Length: 405
Image 1 (tube, rainbow, N blue to C red):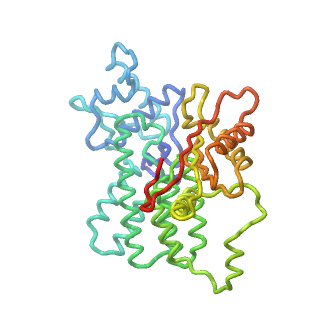
Image 2 (image 1 turned 45 degrees about the horizontal axis):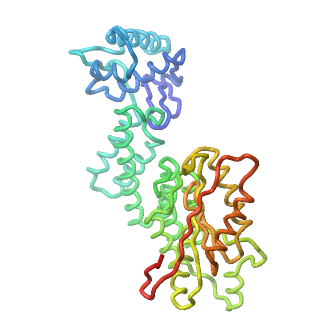
Image 3 (image 1 turned 120 degrees about the horizontal axis):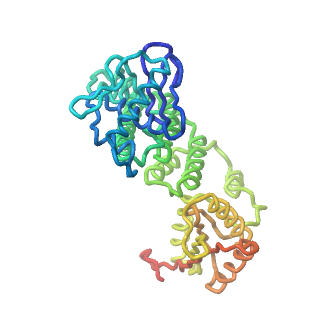
């Protein structure tokens, strides 16, 4: 939030909470008192019109702490808050007033809150008839959202509810703005919108908006690179596989891809890539999925013996590891162990944070067991307590495409 020198209290609720008065951030003292000060100001400033009941304040400030006199504790926090606000240079007024058991922020000090501004812009955009003004309002609303509502307080019930509501509003604004930009073929601004949305609301498929804009302006290769980067990012950060929306975009990009005229031998060289690579073929999940489906079809005639192996990292008790910094390191080591162990004809892909898939061509169950031993040899270090759990399934299909197990 930009520092502004005026007589308005500027409040940021999206992302990190902040209060700015006359260009200066208002901060508290000790860690405990600062927390209570922030909790009190957050709920009061966000609910300026309807106020906050004493019971809600007590829950918000003290949760399940064992306090004999909650009313006295609330009064103490309010008293200390008023002192802090006055010391920060705010006008000497009754900052927090009480009426019929409900607490209100004073009307003597104007407040500008980013969350309130988003609400206002969203309502105006919905009511606007002119498409140009509607677009401007939706875009302005999108840029009001700079991160999740009070992202450090999502365990608090009222904060979680508001965070969900504002996330839905942001998504609606982004979708509607993208649709309007698509209508007027403003793909440059559409690309900017997609990149911004992916930054402030990650892991929500907003990259597809950017990919569409890139594709419509003929930058297919850039769109494909963004697709690959997105798939890898989603897998690393959330253990997420490509969504249906991302897969649809990949299919669309494939239909739009138009190479320069070339002779067959040049095309074949490009398709072959680096033939000197002796390790297994590491690929993204969508590519792996395509290979798997093609192999199943080929097997209807060839009769090859193909197996699918799933490698899962487990802890000392044999339970799958699903998160944590150690898992990231182990997953990287497992990838290297697999690449060093498989044959050149085998395909490898990550399925989740601690899971890897291997498509083993023209092999047997016994060879699968030998491969597991090779992977373990490279993966296990010293007295390591973590291990790899293996599951193997035969990929044998009937003429109608059903798999036989």
